Length: 325
Ligand code: FAD
Ligand code: MG
Ligand code: MG
Image 1: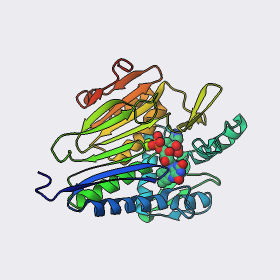
Image 2: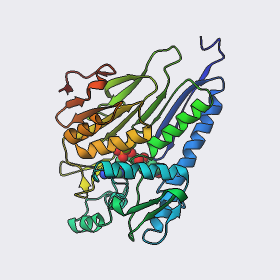
Image 3: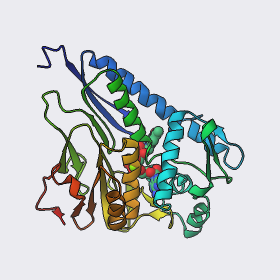
């Protein structure tokens, strides 16, 4: 048993990257591992936050139209992945969405509905083809003045990967990390049973789940319209923006979950946002082209679309409310 092997567990919750971070590991010295894990996250936040003065992303944005900026491998990988999916989705995902995110301010006290003219002005600055990477030097340049990167859609996935990698390097066999809608699990629970990851009911307060995904060694990442939004005249203005219109997406989709052990959590986080913007049909078409990746998508009218590879892993709890089609 765990006890015989000197195995203990530690569970810790903190607030980082603008969200609640929860970690649990089973190890002989779990507190030490958890402490270092939060340090890893803090270090990544220092590099990729837009709210921290002198972060690498702020530096890139400041020097837009002027100078390529040398950055850490971490920030470089997150930007590179964003660009990769921008190309793959023909701009449904766009890491240069920054100016629009700032204009709308969704999730901040300054949230507002901008005028069409303001939106049109910012739209001119959103264009991933004007983001240049210099791989040999790990440099990044936004080629036009006032362009802005925003890594909110995938930096958390990268952080989850780095924490799990650290655990593996330390010989940890079992643990989970949850940050906002991103969950990664290492191995199984110590007793050999699968980890159970809840999928939030997008129409109920936080903590109400509509399904459970039972997994070992996978990442489960959700993008939804229910955490960061404001209501005006019966319309929900949420934080996932369509880079073509400059407005919150208005497709049927209200939640998109990616489940995989074949791709990283960085990929899964980038994909959850991409699928959300692409919508049900195009989103699932993209997922079906990627081996070892599953998706569960919920629509406004309570329909659930799921890729075939998730049938055994996903248990819908609210069967009366949510119908798998
Ligand atoms: P996802 O679907 O994964 O991403 C949505 C986010 O991606 C949007 O919020 C927007 O930022 C961006 N986005 C929108 N549309 C697109 C698009 N079409 N293509 C690409 N990207 C798009 N929040 C705070 O309130 N305070 C903080 O101090 C804070 N610090 C942060 C530090 C870091 C390093 C990071 C990564 C995020 C931070 N956040 C902070 C942001 C916050 O946690 C976001 O809510 C979160 O990143 C959005 O992730 P999500 O998983 O909810 O949604
Ligand atoms: Mg995402
Ligand atoms: Mg996310």
